[in-house]
View (cartoon, rainbow, N blue to C red):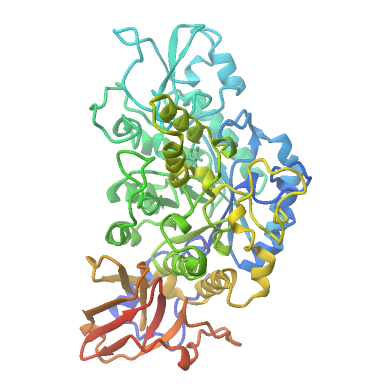
Length: 602
Ligand code: GLC
């Protein structure tokens, strides 16, 4: 852990004391890396990523410097949702390998000082899970109550108007018993009934099973959906997508369930890392989930950043990047959660298109934009999560045909559009902009058409636009996106200001720039980011620091001098961009297209 009281840093000022009061934790200081198993590395040539593949890349991850690996679901699964549909919680998906492989992964990660965080999907199972196979047999089956069943509504149709994330009704009719079951995701992912105590006990037992294997944490899938409104009321017709979410997210018993899960399972391993996937929560709710005194989760995911660029009413419609909205959510979480609770931040994952090129520069601008994103991710409050390939600046795949897409949500959306008479080209354009498959194209490890991902036929096509990008080449080139990430990750281990520093935003309304300070003791960083494709000028007051000088630490256009010692020095003076000045209590100047620059105020 970072040593908070460094000699020579600060004199015990009020601010410093406040920072010191904040509880330190390894998972606040670490960087999390998301491995999406099907697309990371194939070890046996069948075209699908697997555990042997992951094992072969642990030195790469260690070199990058990340501390926690979030491993997407690797449990036995019919794979309707790439493993988020589990049919056996205690077995490894056969094409991924064996339990011995997983145990080896835990050992090998620990040898390299990394931790393993597994995905825990307990809002729903696969419809092929033995519990559901039993449950659907008859209304009186002992497993019936493990799931949520309702008779048809008075009109003989669905029990209410809730929608699923796929855009269809959230209810699926089961012919045999004439009742509907709830499924907030795919029809092959029936929701579990958390009201039923025996089901909860089974889940806690599964968690204990995994703890006994030596894992270090869980990322809890859709966890704020496990408690539903007991009356299942209809939602207003014009409610946000998916309809009914006010009744199935953050339900009345959610905290009771989490506290019980903590008591009966999580607490058995002190220091366990638990990250909740908790979409659409208020700051009060985020605090409730993560205030350590409440004994629920270690952190919530700040999911609002990945909603930027997406229409709130129609997830299939891309809208322009919105820098003020980005600033607003970063500030809100800092103000509302940072001191007492905690959260993890990310800009890319397996559920969203990659930011490049959908919102940021392609071609010559790609690397600069990728480093801009990296700077943002590592210098805002919260534990950063890097999604595989982001550290190389991989781009979003836009496959030429719908046949290349694999995600059920994408395919059903496309079909519906065609049925509604939308021209195929237009429907495909929507898919290009919004499908989550865009971020699921396989990793590129080395040069070549298949990028060293597999020797077989990849389960989803490679992104042909990225043939010039690969890990091996980037590791060789000191100014690559990979090394930019590596240095930021290294820096986080040395600079408490990146983890525990106070955050202060300037020019909140500025349309293109994001400028803020992080302060820890006497150490203040000034971060300047330009999300614009054009050079952008600015002028703002910085009275509080008017006596200070700007020392450039690093930036995406200025290079980064390697430091021999562990201390962060300053970038070469010649590379200091001359455009930024601090004088007479005013910060002014201009930033180049997609420029990121981080200064120390001395
Ligand atoms: C989460 C996962 C997503 C999955 C869904 C259902 O949102 O990130 O990939 O489809 O839950 O499990």
